[in-house]
Image (cartoon, rainbow, N blue to C red; front, side, top):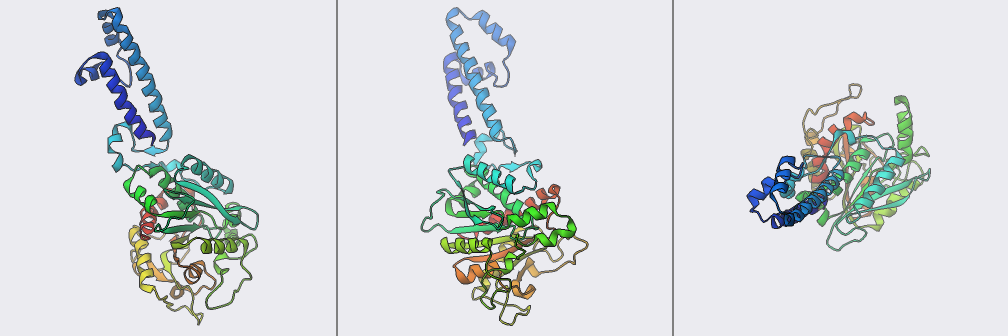
Length: 400
């Protein structure tokens, strides 16, 4: 890590300075300033020194220059970091690199692609970018893998995934996952918790399953948002997966659906979640039942699913509350005990992705509704990140 290298360089160079000056540490420290030379002390030293003592001071200047360069490199590496300074390097294990609020914004497809490629390049030792297919309008379905050994499945290391923006007009999850990628990459080797998560889990993050729908949502007015929920063919992707109880009601799987189905069946995922918005709740399978009615439909692992959903809701500051804050005055408030619900009890959905994960693979998947807003102003994104960061990390940790 750049800051560790800087600390090591400081220690080595300090030794060279002390050796050159022949002074004990406490006096040498008074002679050398890493921020600015003391002009009067330097001139006095030159006056009192003989010609054979001028060379060490030349060496000091060279050392100062190297330290300035190293310090500049450190600042550049941490240009969006708050609370991290050279003085805190010895407390490295306790640090956590945060982003400034100004770095939160909505990213269109091109901007998202650039960000993902940039982080894959900068953090290539732990981040690997790949795609699982293309959308109707030929946009790639990007996935960022984060692992201490990216590109390889390791026996005994669980596979985890997050998917967002399945509905084009639900932008919060997309931005939360982009910031999660940035947070994990920047904090690996800095924060012990993040380092342990990445060392023990192979994480796959898909910020946008429906990039076509997002592009429409980003340009349409509020009244047109409903038409951007679906993909470019007008199909709701969360009603498009093969269902265990009913035949498909909206045709054959779409390109995005087929790509995700192939992805699910090609990697032995253990745990996953998809991020949505429109409510504030953690929703677990089954999403429907043989009657098609909105009644509780338990899986054989209902107790496990309830605990998984609760692990997220309880880590969220308000999701688990009986009367959680509600920003949308025009949308009726819904109440959920502990901030969780069985999908079919809430409302029956056939062809949902979370049921497909459970029925057709070994993956336990839940649906996370992050709030009533779908495409909030970018100025509200920092608040959503503060609310969901801990819960997103806590849920990943459930896999081990």
